[in-house]
Length: 91
Image (cartoon, rainbow, N blue to C red; front, top):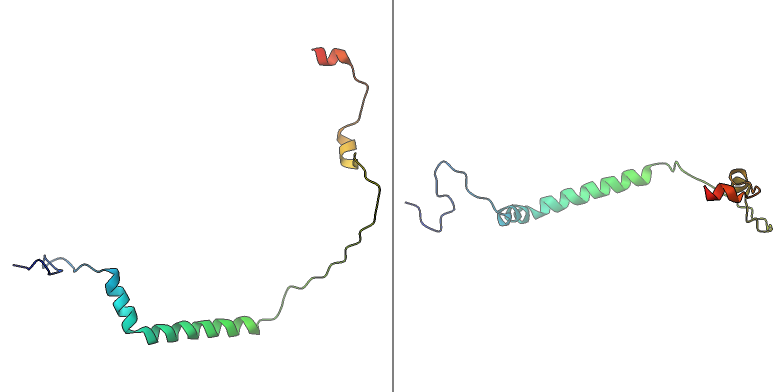
C-alpha cells in the first residue's frame, strides 16, 4: 500500500510532473542552456550584421504656397451647384 506522500499511487500510471520538476532540470543544466542561448544569439547577430543593406530611399519635398481652395477639383466634379427647385424638395 502506498503512503500519502508518494507521487505514484497506481503502478500503471505515469508519475505526475510539475513545473518544479522542469525547472530543476533547467537549473541543473543551466550552463548548457546559457551556452546554447548565447551561441544562437551571437550567430544571429553576426548573420544580421553581415547582410547587405537592400533598402535605401531619399525624398525631396517641394512646398509651394497657394491660396486656399475650399472647393477642390474632386469635389467640383461631384457637386455642381445648380438652380434649386423647391418643388423637388417637397416631394
